[in-house]
Length: 91
Length: 454
Image 1 (cartoon, chains in turn cyan, red):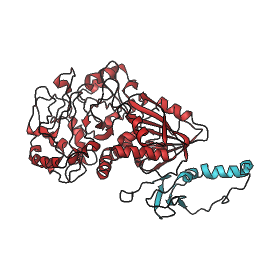
Image 2 (spheres, helix red, strand yellow):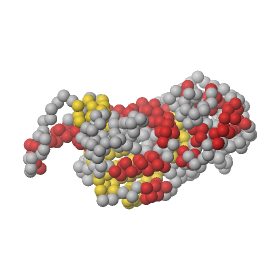
Image 3 (tube, chains in turn purple, cyan):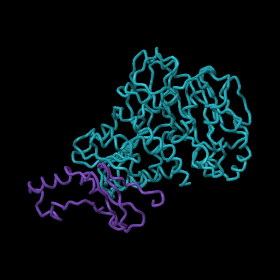
Image 4 (cartoon, helix red, strand yellow):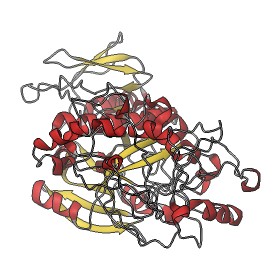
């Protein structure tokens, strides 16, 4: 799973407050290598853009999980594929 | 109804794809041209998602956009992943995506697997939700109206047979639905919408002359019959065989069923004993349809005993008037009924469990007149055939278990095939956030392109 994909995902556990499902927390050991916010004028910052491109599109999460920020429900990622299915009881 | 719908789909969509996923890895199926064009027209840098991507056939069409695919079936998603696609597992009815984040969505051969109108609407609404204003969606669904004929009913079961997943087929295959493919023998009157049941074992090479005992099978999974290119030799072979096996299985629409009264159920219980003795032939003529039972019995809590599974049941019976065709029923019996279709006892979700609702059901599709009998209550012929085939041609042997090579499985997939205009109406009436831009008929599918209003 690429980080750009992660950007698009939201937890869909029922009963969350609006926006409560995003962003899913990636559980891995690695710390982020990017600043929390892009600095103004980032579009012109070649160096920053390269790092951003790398993180978004060239880093893949292979094993781990995505945790819903509000409910705590975890969605597994295995072999690079996140499984966002809810069980029949949950949905 | 929700529960029944999910059970039906679990058994006749998800489980089938999961079990047959392994066979799809061989297929190099082509993308539908229209879908390709839709994808290629997206601006570079667009975020595009294929909902129900299967093995990811469309995910590498346009490398200038960000392609994401998702599917309910893990097996298929794994295959796409191995190809390097960015994929995830999720449910169309509950997409794990943020609102309005995609520039384009495609749904090719997916929503026809939803068993109720409400679910189909929900699927479309979910896809509309994740579209950015101005973003476009393309939806393909199987059409009731096929090239030469049409399905007689909208809710059908389509058998799948692994004999179809031959590498040989894959090259010339052009499919749009998770690797389904169809044969269209040239010059043959083999209709795309006709399904062939076969018990041929899986083979890579098709050599008709060596295989007279094991006729091959063409699973004419709709709607792609017109696009196959196979050798002349095969054409002739298939044309000869194809006519022998044609079956559609019609299910009762869950939507319709929901309107029926419960007291129908009571009638069924009386007929329970009848099943044990009845031969249950698979319908044979092109236009025959089998009504596999009324919703009340679909997920019949009071399931019948060992005789629940009509297909299994029928195997033990021999009917001389049937042609010595391969044992198609064996296919349908699902090899012990473990993972495929008609589950037998204990499985409340068995779609085929239920006895039918009318006393005057007949199941004889044999002109010799297997005739009406109590047993015939199992199936109901809902249309007559105008086929010029002889009874033998169209008949399929029920109890004829000739060879031990019958190891192919047939899984029955549920489809709700769409009438002309149905998809458009569905969107117009229920999904106001989408505006339809165009609609057309393409290779046995109804197709629409709609835009998210902004």
